[in-house]
Amino acid sequence: MAVKIRLARRGRKKAATYDIVVADARSPRDGRFIEKLGTYNPNTNPATINYDADRAFYWMMTGAQPTDTVRAMLSYRGVLYRRHLQLGVDKGALTQDVADQRFADWKTDKDARIEGKRTGLVDAKSDARTAALAAETKVKEARSEAQRQKQAAALAAAAPAPAPAAETETTETAEVSAEDAA
Image 1 (spheres, rainbow, N blue to C red):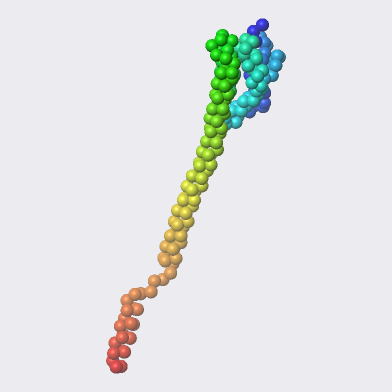
Image 2 (image 1 turned 180 degrees about the vertical axis):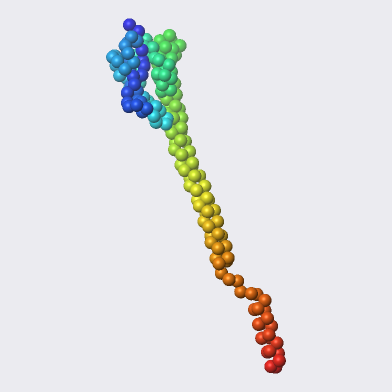
């Protein structure tokens, strides 16, 4: 009996989630399975992968073949690297302590990179929001300035302008009459 580690589709239309299952290769995709290892949700960013790593490692060591998608997920979370190290221990190339230490170092580094990506996405989203708000404020100020200028022009056109020549004549005559009086 060929055993596969594969995905079984769950969820509603256009919002699928998947179960990571160990199943007989002859059974249908969403049908009968031997064991459920975890879940996979591709709708989040980054995709959420929750599974029992020890059971996945057990099934990999007993010969279960993962599908391409599941292989990528197991590689992403370190099960394939752990299997690689364990095969090295079985062959005598390294000791169990060295293999465990290498895997622990890899795991901490990988978790830090995943967290960095997650925080980077949050920071990028907040930066984009701030930039959009600044652009919107700039457009709003430009519109209000154009509206203010338009209203000032309308007021200037509506108000009758006094003749500047008449004002100068009255002030000159007042000055001349003041000189005559003296």
